[in-house]
Every structure is written in structure tokens, then in C-alpha cells.
Length: 86
Image 1 (tube, rainbow, N blue to C red):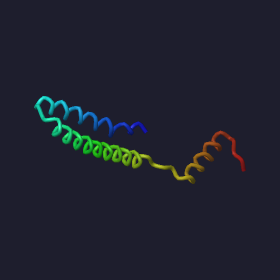
Image 2: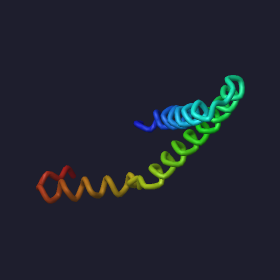
Image 3: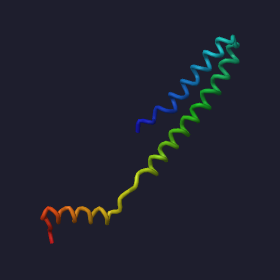
Image 4: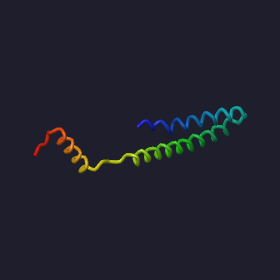
């Protein structure tokens, strides 16, 4: 599906915002990197959860058609066209 890029995009977006903010506030490099690592891991996990939830919602929205109903519909359509195999 097209959703496989949600976790890395969310992670990189949050990392970019965090990096710019910490650079503007003059954090030390070691502190900045440890905070950035934590932010990247947390937002990657959040992105994976979001992707999983969207996939679950899609699976719930799909209503599978029963095989018997499908056969009946095909047979009815064939009868209407006059192409019945008895």
C-alpha cells in the first residue's frame, strides 16, 4: 500500500523540527544528538501505530461478499441475458 512511507516521513519531519529548534536554542552537540535520537525513535513508533490503525480501518470498511451470493448474482445476470446453462 501507499502507507509504507508514513512512519519514516513522520520521523524525519519531527527530527527536522527538533534539530532546527535545538540549533536555534544553542544546545550542546552531545545533548542535541541524544534528544534527537529519542525523538526519532518515538515518532517512528507513532508513525507505525498510525499506519497500522489506518490499515485496520481499511480492512473493516471492506465487506467481503459471500460466495453463495456471488453465484446467485452471476446466475441471475445470466438468466436476464438468456444464457442459462441448465
